[in-house]
Length: 164
Ligand SMILES: NC(=O)c1ccc[n+]([C@@H]2O[C@H](COP(=O)([O-])OP(=O)(O)OC[C@H]3O[C@@H](n4cnc5c(N)ncnc54)[C@H](OP(=O)(O)O)[C@@H]3O)[C@@H](O)[C@H]2O)c1
Image (tube, helix red, strand yellow):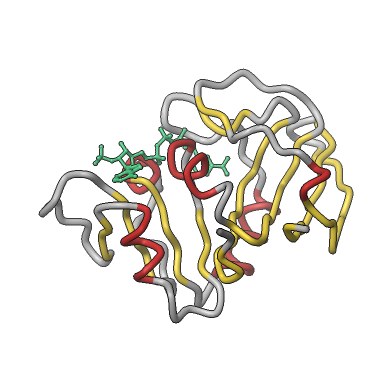
C-alpha cells in the first residue's frame, strides 16, 4: 500500500550512506535551505535518534512527530507515535507529510511513500547508517537539478521522484 500524502526527504550518497555517529555526513547549506523550503508548514515524522541529532528541536513552523517504542517519553513541542501505523494515522488529514529519517524510519517507510525528494551526492561516503537501496526503475523523475559544491568538493543532484 502506498500513501500518496507521505513523502520521504533524504540526503544520500551514491552508496546510500546517510549518517555516521548519529550525525549527517556533510554540511551542505544549500540543501538545508531546500529542506526548510520544502518542509515548512508541513508535518514531519522522525525516529527518536534523529530527533536527538537535531541541533535545535523541534523544527519550527512544522508539526514534529517522533516515533518511539518508549511510551511517556517527553519530546518538548512534539507529538509522539508508538508505531509506524500510529504515525501514519496522525498525518492522515495532512495533504503532504514528510519522513525525515533516520535509517530505521526510512527503511520502514520506503515501501509506503509515494514521493521521494532526494539530494543525491555523486560519490560513496563512509557511514554507519544507510538508506534502503533505491531501484530507480520504480520511480518517475519529475524534477532534477545538478550542482557542484566547492567546499565539499562533490557534485550532487536534487531529484524529485514519484512512485510509478
Ligand atoms: N542524510 C539524511 O538525510 C538524514 C536524515 C535524518 C537522519 N539521518 C541520520 O540517520 C542517523 C539516525 O538514524 P537511526 O537509524 O540510527 O535512527 P532513527 O531512525 O532516527 O531512530 C530510531 C529510533 O526510532 C524509534 N523507532 C523506529 N522504528 C520504530 C517503530 N516501528 N516503532 C516504534 N519506535 C520506532 C526507536 O526509538 P526507541 O529506541 O525510543 O524505541 C528507534 O531507536 C543519524 O546518523 C542521522 O544523522 C540522516
